[in-house]
Structure formats: C-alpha cells, structure tokens
Length: 344
Ligand SMILES: C[S@@+](CC[C@H](N)C(=O)[O-])C[C@H]1O[C@@H](n2cnc3c(N)ncnc32)[C@H](O)[C@@H]1O
Image (cartoon, rainbow, N blue to C red; front, side, top):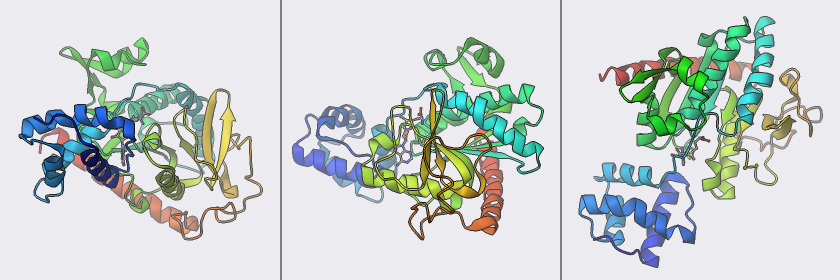
C-alpha cells in the first residue's frame, strides 16, 4: 500500500502542506513525503496519495490533518543551538535589561520562542537567565516570561513534559547544566520546575495574526524561516516587528539572514553573535546599538520603512495595553499548562 507518489499527487500534497503550514516543499522532497506520510497511510488503510489528499480535505478528518501536518514538520533542535545567541543573551542583553530594572525602567523580560519545537531553545534561555541571576542581584528568575509556540502537537507535548532521553540530553547540554537543572526520571531526565515554570507552551501557526501575542523584548524565529518562501518570510518578519517592544531584538539561525530589503530591522554584531534590532530611535538597549544602520536616522518605525498600517507598536498607550494583554495571556496559559500537567 501507499507506494510511489505520482507528480500530480505530490503537487496536491505539497499544496495542502503549504496552505496549512506555509512550509514550501521543493521537487526534491518526494522521498521525504513518501517516508513521512507512507507510515500514516499504512496505519489508516489509505491506498494512495490521491485518497490521502481527499481525506485531508474532509472536515471530519481533523485528527488525520493534524497527524500529516505534524509528520511534515522538521523538529530538529538542540540545547544552546549555535551557542552565540545564548552568549549574546548572557553577555549583552541581560546586563542591559538588568541596568534598566535597576533604573526603574522595566520590571520584566519577555521572550517569544516562535518555533520552539521540543523546547530546548526556550529552556536554554531560562537556564542562562538563572545562571546570570545568581550573580546579578537586579535579576530574579520570576521576572522572566517565555512564551514558546509551535505548530507541531507532538513537539509541544514533549516540550511541555520537560522530559528528555539520553540522546537529546547529549546534544549541546553542558554536564554542569544537566546536573544543576535536571532530575533523573527512570532512564530519562526531567527539567527542574523552577526552569519549566518560566516557559508557557502554546500551539500557534506563524500564518496567524500576531496581534494578540503581546509585546516582547526578544523574539526567536530560528531555523523555521528556511522552510518558507521569501514572501511569507517577509510577512513573518513584519508581524514580528509589530510584536517587538521598542528596541526589541530578533534572532534568526546563525546560517540564516533576513530576505533582501526587509524593512524595520538593523543588524547588530557583537563578537560572534548577530541579532536584528527593531529600528526605533526612541529606546534602543543601552550599549547594544546596532553596528550598521540607522537608529539615529529612523525617528519612527514608519520612517524606517515599515509599511504604514502594519502591526507596528502603537505608542506608549498601545504598549501598555499590549503589556497588560500579555500578562493576562501568560497567566491564562500558565493555568492551562498546570491543568495539562495535572491531567485535568
Ligand atoms: C527546525 S525546528 C527549529 C527549532 C528551534 N527554533 C531551533 O532553532 O532549534 C522548526 C520548527 O518550526 C515549526 N514550524 C514549521 N512551520 C511552522 C508554522 N507555520 N508555524 C509554527 N511553527 C512552525 C516546526 O514544527 C518545527 O518544530
């Protein structure tokens, strides 16, 4: 059963995947589709890819749609992936936020891991925060809110459990962090509650509006834009711009860059780290101004080339409202996570 996919069937399946996830499958991904979907089709007794496509368009087949979407996502991740963004967080961003807390200019630090996969990215940030907070008295772990979202149900379930096997544990996690931040659980390891409690996981499709997500100091869209066409990459980056606080910071993967002509961001290099800072003259992070470009030239995001009417911050009142909204969302998500963990 299932067998080889025809060109017509491949086109139908990839259209479905792109429509549901924005993931763009090139011609050479035939083998990927066959291996990832063949097993589901065997299990479900679906004879060919045409029948699969018909089933996917049947509104009663919600579970099958979820399974297929899940199977077509690539959830590759590891602890402290690329190292340099986490070094930048520790050495540049957190000291700047701590200074702002001392000066009474901020109370919390909000981060969005926007394609969080099985959670390593979000938990790595929380561990770094905890490390810095040990020596920087301005920072308290409970000032950190991390929202971690993904499209994949199975990745989110793993992330929420906070339990990892030996192979995942060996990928990028220093021995001292394993010792300090994990508890053995059978032959697996469970992240300690003080780290897990800093992260709220939620299902979210990057195709959806970011308006309700609130306002963040840092957004990470690492190793997800690579799966999208340039036009949709630009859309995600425009929406992320709107969801960043003034002077907020975007990280993409170390081997990724923003598509040519993406407005609203200035590239910042510090040592081996690169990030993209929201171009907004009003309140750049102290000591972290961009190396290239144009904070001083850009009096407002609109002047900096961000399209008028895009999801751009709406001044202080807008930011305050967004902050309140986020606090409420995070509170509700925590409750949902608690219920999920307790099996309610
Ligand atoms: C390769 S992982 C990246 C994980 C992590 N950011 C890292 O750098 O290690 C890419 C993730 O993007 C998610 N993804 C793909 N398309 C998405 C979409 N449209 N909306 C939300 N998440 C998506 C996948 O489910 C997958 O878990």
